[in-house]
Amino acid sequence: MKWRLTYGVLCDKNVLQKLKDKFYRAVVRPTMLYGAGYWPAKNSHVQKMKVAEMRMLRRMCGHTRLDRIRNEVIRDNMGVACLEDNVREVRLRLFGYVKRRGIDAPVRRCERLALKCLRRGRGRSKKYWREVIRQDMALLQLTEYMTMDKKVWRLRLK
Image (cartoon, rainbow, N blue to C red; front, side):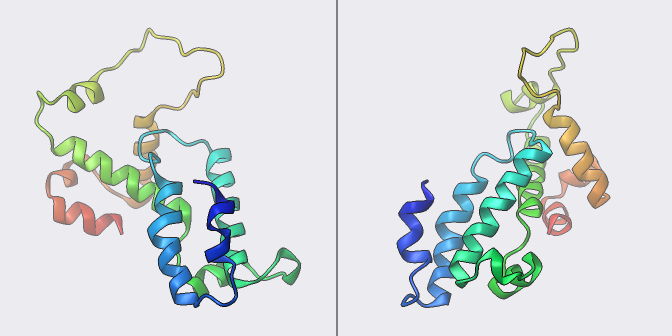
């Protein structure tokens, strides 16, 4: 999705803030998070996504960086959580789905597949999806056994 195409709705002063919020939550945010659960994001990727999000939120509020308003204040006014937390939630929700599948499911076989002898090509990330999941689970104090109970898993992610 191109930011300039949404500019007319999100930055128009005649459009109600409530409508802008709904549009942002329904169109912009899901587009930014699409596929985020499947790739091990580097810190630089997450930082670029945060910058793009804050730029959009500032424009929606009618502020600029020259106004020197903190990001947390803008997020609180808009009622939007940090993008990094949402990416983590999406990633862990996908992990829970994979773990609840049967052992013979193709998704599960790919998850268990470990290619230790395989070298990654030049320019490829050295970080694996599984490592990112371990870091996320350690941060939220989760275990793999919790994935079997879907309700408990979802409650702990939020």
